[in-house]
Length: 270
Image 1 (tube, rainbow, N blue to C red):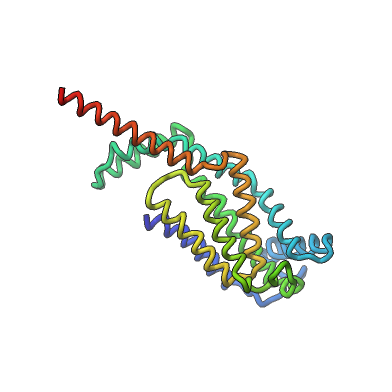
Image 2: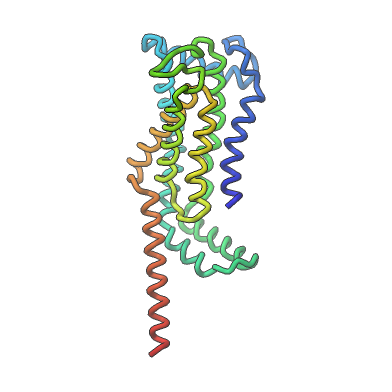
């Protein structure tokens, strides 16, 4: 349980830590040097400005468009993640049977359970770590986006809707939406009905909400648009209730197991 939660907390914490490891006070220009500034931050900054100029200087609209384009760019990875979640959902009954078979908590039994699980994953061609890859890809992009926003002078004081892009949302609307859409996205992708996943289901949106209270609204806007894109993608690829299907599959497996147990006990009585 702590390992799963710790991984998510580590990734977000790493993002926050890395934001302070670079000089965000230095404006980003075409003359900026270094791999990070030259090949990640400046191209993003330039592209945001370019798109904004196409839409009458609307940097908020530009951020929405650039976010969608970035999501399309990493779409193959995200589709792979979604299909992996669907594959994991399909084998939930078998996983539940293995957990019941190796329900003892001693080390030897748990090692046997892990071995059986890995053999099953290989048999079905499922990679349980496939869902982590898009997260690793997104982190540098999110960090570069943060720098592009903070270090591009044209963005800082630009208004969009009810907020300024360079400062946190004063009415906390965006952080709330970021938390809600994060919850919906995770709920749709959740394929295991267990306490560990349920903790992440609620803790991740809370963490995103808290960070969004302090991040520039432009960055929170990027996160919200990305979440909505992911929700739509999941809906069209796997349907609206991937997580609910997993829960139903697990419930069916449990019901079948109980029925089998009752049958056996009934036979003994006779």
